[in-house]
Image (cartoon, rainbow, N blue to C red; front, side, top):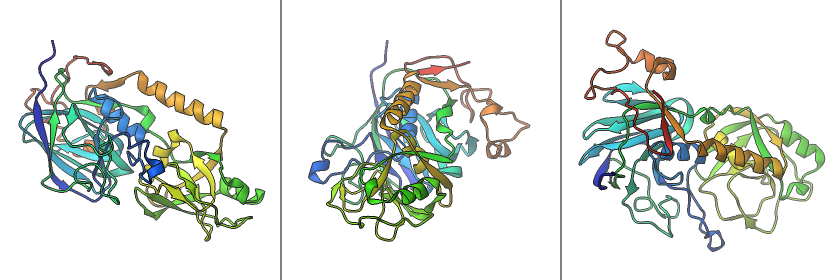
Length: 363
């Protein structure tokens, strides 16, 4: 029998730039000029939520390379982190970059930029007790919508959590091979204004190579590579912008519109990144090189279904073993003392075999 739900608090001890609250997004208001916001990497966001038993689109903390430190108040919390290969530590001891754990009252979870990736997600089991704006917690800082007072998280913020009553096991590594996404190729569907570019410019767009510019944020990623020329000018009647739309302004340098994009735009869009590859690009750091590959709408739909099928199988959480650890993790360990603590009160508690759908736990 499930225990009654209770309340606890996530307190932010420190936060770098770009830490916000994000759910699946604020949909249905684009015609009013309100963009969806939501996660930069929806697959990682869903993975973290599912690992603690939340619905995939639940509200989680989105963390940029600026990092964050959090602790629990008024009792322990079940949390999970997934996304880029960030550096995590609990009680000052390192953890794998994708992990589920019990954050005990007073314990400090630190998340810092690691070897790869630009975004990670901290999900907490239960319901975030923050008012919604237009039906969503998604933070859009430019307009002051959603999240916590429409702004990024800062030190001292306290987030109330109505905890779920289901029992959860202890610390374990999240087995999510789908988060290992090399950047080499990004798939796109051409259009809707690819006819504004001659065939040789479409070929140049697909050949690249491209790299992510240092000029990037939640609104847009600017790309560096061959300069494209327009066959029919670079102004169009403004129309709607989807996440992943690639605009080409007058200077010929493509811009990829991301989660906090504007609702409409007046530059020709040569292509749109398919949904399953948006997180792949979002995780890229400046200088990361890649090429575009044109696919059909049918291929894009098939890729989306494949992604959904992976998540529908449930998230596997395994006890911490050396195979889950990066070299950075291992260098931070006291190898004389061992890797896994011998008692539940130690830094790295053992993992039991309790299961709660949709999370699967291996022993």
